Picture 1: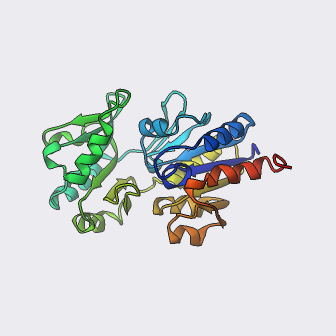
Picture 2: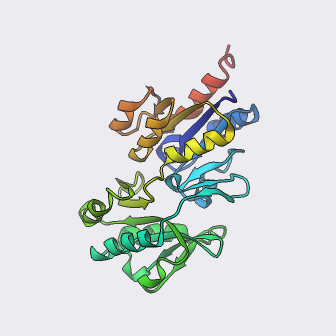
Length: 280
């Protein structure tokens, strides 16, 4: 068991459709961790929101957040590894967005803290709804309102996210950036709003999982996912499992297709693999 690293996506995979974990999944994951199984997750979320939605499970090894831009200590929330853009890349990316009348959220380490910056008057409806969903928690103080694009690139920028009101609004920027950077252009599984996420070219859940795998001394990587941003992770893994609600392209690559995220599919598979005689 200790020779394998198990990595699950969160939204649409480990989490149910209401963005929660069932009591069964919490109990199963905790049993696995206590038995010494190396279980982690890889998510597009920040560590702040990931910790909030995974309350109830006791992951004791580092986790992967922001689609691979950070590997974070799951207990202290301290970054153990992180990516970042060069100053020239930051300016290039933000300039492309501006040329198309877009003002993305910029995520950066500023004065040692993870922050995201937004210009309220430049946010479209979908982007503003996202910002509102992140500023109502006392333990989440990342939001930073700015008032001009000049402030958007403060600190060490590692991630851009632009949420549009239509795919057509974001497509030109995607076409300009996709060959130079790691771009994820997809619809949010909860709101159906189109997102364009931009990360450094060498950043992915897969690259971060390989770093974590090496740190832990594991020879095998097994992953679980549901969406297009899990494709690199699937390509890198020794075994890969898609949930029933996964995108067709993910199912096509999968070692196997499990039940849906609303049926505790990942936890049930892990228990069967790691505790095969539990129900004998």
